[in-house]
Amino acid sequence: MSAFDWLVVGAGFCGATFAERAAAHGHQVLVIDARKHVGGNAFDEIDDHRILVHPYGPHIFHTNSTKVWHHLSQFMEAVRTSGAGAG
Ligand SMILES: Cc1cc2nc3c(=O)[nH]c(=O)nc-3n(C[C@H](O)[C@H](O)[C@H](O)COP(=O)(O)OP(=O)(O)OC[C@H]3O[C@@H](n4cnc5c(N)ncnc54)[C@H](O)[C@@H]3O)c2cc1C
Image (cartoon, rainbow, N blue to C red; front, top):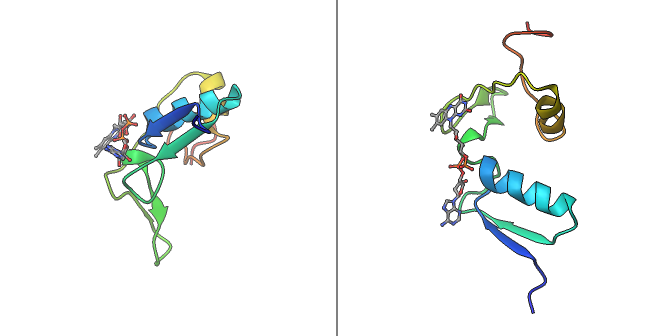
């Protein structure tokens, strides 16, 4: 018998969102990814020169939902480009 309820292959938006929601509802989830990081193609990181780089291409997140914004803000730090707080 497995110790996990779910095996999620891929820790991009899709897999990570499913895994977080399942875990939040008490399920045991194992997430695996071929890459060494979470975030899939939206992953970014600070390099050795302290520059934010986007190895798979830059991403812009759009939403007009306060609920979505607050939920995702638990897991990410976004740089606003427009709207309240931009600049
Ligand atoms: C250059 C570029 C710019 C983009 N810009 C935007 C943007 O500005 N705004 C926006 O909303 N969207 C943008 N997108 C789209 C966005 O990246 C995707 O919609 C989103 O990443 C899809 O998430 P996903 O979880 O479905 O897949 P992915 O992000 O592709 O994640 C899938 C993960 O699964 C892993 N995986 C796959 N197969 C296996 C396997 N067999 N075993 C183990 N691991 C596996 C991969 O390593 C990967 O980490 C952009 C995409 C690209 C390429």
